[in-house]
Length: 569
Image (cartoon, rainbow, N blue to C red; front, side, top):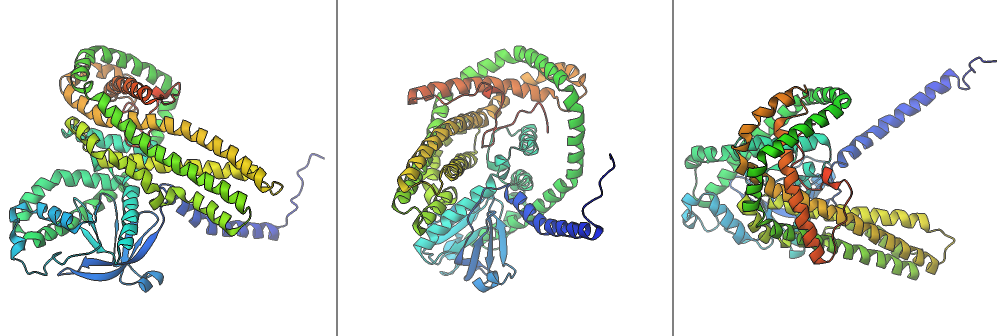
């Protein structure tokens, strides 16, 4: 009575179970690690096939077998068997920052522009010199700081398939940080922006595409490029395009060295970062109410002090262009998401039709599989992605006067938003369909239930896309206008910030900064204007985007707006 019962398992049985658990973990953890890594990136179909590549010294077109991995990394092998047997690749690269060209004439113009001082020298080269031999179905990957990759496909169809795959890989690699909602990722992007502002660079551009190490590498390469060009370009051998090619190889070597150093530095910083986050977690949590009260007091005083210059800047510089920028952003994302809705509805209709015809046939299973693969079908999603591209020129012209040069990032953000919403809707449909369909239903009953599921999915998609659309406009509106406004108010308004340092330092927390509160005040004023213009434009177009009660306090778009700088993670 009351005593602890003896275990029903003897020692041998417990040891056996421990062995089974160890075996399970040994086999499971590699899969788990792989899925943790894969979860950081959206899914991409692996693409592979034969190509020819311009390589070697001197460069010559040589056959290779190319593989675009599911994580967006490109590898090439001497032949297919080398790849299938697990051999070493001839080369590989992350596609971050590359631009794909499929016109040899356009690529040669770009190559000539790299060394304009030797323009015309290539006319004296041998007829079969570098890149002079016509290429029928080229795939040129150009990078501002890396060696160019020149491939050629055997047919137009193969070129088209590789073009879609490579563009998907470039987008995938570029938006690693922008997709992340982790506080550390947001803090990193914000730190890059602040660092560049302190260097005098206020305009937003595509420097934040890629991983953290790739971003820092791009920042340093942009800083060093003028000096590097002045010091080394005159001494390069060769003429014309051969010289330009040598320049890209030199840049590639510099880029590799900088990337290795940035990666090592960030790895060395990781223990300090973990310790800092742990310390902040301990200190912020018990004092968060006091921090927020002090922040509100300082923000109120700052708002009063800078109201005059800020309002003058907004009325004079921002207000005349804001409606056109918001209108173009709205139409860009609306067109892309409407294309998603059309594809989604068509896919659900095909499933219902197939169910009525053949409820248990092979073709139905094939339709279900194809429907589930829609978000990752590059050819299918190209309809949505093209819509995101259409306004690039118009929006670029509107945003350029404000120093915004990040159109590639913006387009990637719109395309990624389309893919995410399609993936969410497809997953919702398949989950609801699985719950409501049973073997007891006949074809007509099952089709009727699928029709109800279709209605629920489209209703949810309308709500989700409206909220995502509004976040997109707010986020990119801030990307375009916030750095410009900060530059216009610098240094006049920032001279007043030291007056508030005493109040902030009295709190005794690293999380609260005067500069962060200052930017939050300006951000809040900009958001009010963006919201007003967005609502006006949405009403003119026929329907305002749904709003959440507290949406003004949280900005978590699927694109890279500057995150609030008051609290650092």
